[in-house]
Image (cartoon, rainbow, N blue to C red):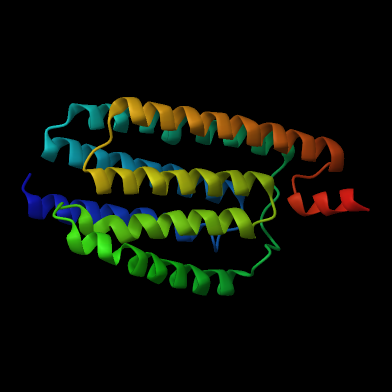
Length: 219
């Protein structure tokens, strides 16, 4: 695999991953959120494999394997169980409506290009062209977290945010040491477990997973 090909693969894959992130902004059901996250994670794993093959880095291929196990299989299945337990509450009334969310997402992607432009200009890596897309994915994941009301969809937004961070790390360093990525996976699992406890407490108190209900605690 030559440099031009890995550039095309990483740019195309990062574009698809960003589209799956933006998809969260117009979908309403948790099942659609989880499906978008699963496919996005699969695309990221493929990008990691492509970089690992081109760079001759077997550690990155192991990272891709862990990525598939954790984010394509385990976490989506667990989110599905949480959905069955707490009901399939959709994002019918997010803090920001769909049309405005899509416009703001476009602005965030443009901002990502502006922020990463100096880095791309000085980088010589064949993956540099995809860095703005990874930064855009980080911004979109954060946007999902702060604009959605349902705790479970916020969890998916957090996972998408972490996907963006992992993608940017892989593109910007041209590979992630296995020990570093294992530490990141551990952080994700810990964050996921904390959020799960959060969901259980919200549902136990309000019989709902709408975080907007937390405002009632002030009265």
